[in-house]
Length: 549
Length: 49
Image (cartoon, rainbow over all chains, first blue to last red):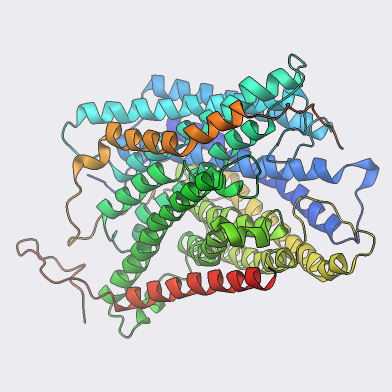
């Protein structure tokens, strides 16, 4: 069924590439903002021309956390469904383009208001910080555009199912559908707060806002957002990496099961971001912490599955000893090396996540730069290195080119540079966080307080790491530009793994969407209904908007 | 021990489970690392009470 020589149709490739171009432009601009941030926080550099640190911070967070990720993911998924479930129909592709343009226009509007200094509300845009209405309207267009693209993918999947009754859908298509369902259900939360609270308030139609409701709706969206980033990386790990190394997938069913568990458990968990928030009963926080720990299960399943895939492959090549199989892996292939390093970084990233989600331990790290260090491991290393590794075959596949040996070598160097930079920056952030250094804030010695002075060496280490990471961004941009425009013409494979012979047959129950979405909705209702009623019925007076920058 | 992963034996159903000792060791290491990190920060929490 899955033939390794299948190509993504050129028209679908164009749609996917349009998304990928925007993603890498966002990486360039957002990365530059990140460099400026770490330099400011070292205390040795001041921004010129009165540019605010918080403007730069918002630019960095929005462009990398929202734009780079969403565009790369949707572009990659369009390519993946076209490759595995057949060429998109003209209608699906048309709506894909509508989604793309809405997202692009929305991004441009949002970026404009951030850059003119009217929306320095940080990436989390918490009320009562109040941005210009244009910032929220732009973000709304990004979300609506992504919904349209999601529905286009659902339509394509439904067409495949209709043409193949009783058959299990291709794994990458199934995974793309799960990820877009997750995105749709969770982004309803951010859409609700933006449309019904933030936009009317920023336009002056209402004076005051219920801060707790808006933060709760944000985190109803904000945590599954993390999984919306992570699941495409898992797609590459489960369904593509085994093919790249020359092996087979350990189990198709296990991969589908882990995606369904993410769909069910990753949404009713937002309170673990609000553990120190007053106004939420601790019993409800406890319930959501328990549900958060349920999400650990599919991640551990993924870790097991990856180790098993690598070991089975290594042993089939004659590896002996406990870890002899590691030596058989293709370390010189950047398509494998970059995502593999991403997987390794997910181990400390996951450990940090368990700390964040535990109520007492959260009090040690809450709102410290530990949290920033944590998501630079999860998103900015695990996910991003996997996306880079994916780009190394996806872009030449779509542009009809091949990656040269020199570019592959550069991509290996890029991965090493990224790892060194991140070890410096993220470790420094974790340690400074344990010593109480705040996240979000610009450089300050807080009146030469002894505790604040302790943070300075770590902040300098962050600047060193951030500078090395910026070199990593320049390298990846060189590679991506080469692959898109200058690499030699030729055929590059879109690798799709086959399942190992001894794996069990995949049951159809994984595609019983009514069942899985039903369970997800029930869990969301259980976790959120009572606390939500409480927040509205016992609300303090709402807050006016503040512009503190 | 050699697994039967890439051998072509379509007729006979593969009875043997693949040898995954390295995977077991790896996931155990992962589990210990998670517990170690959690306990370390928990003691930090207790120290600061």
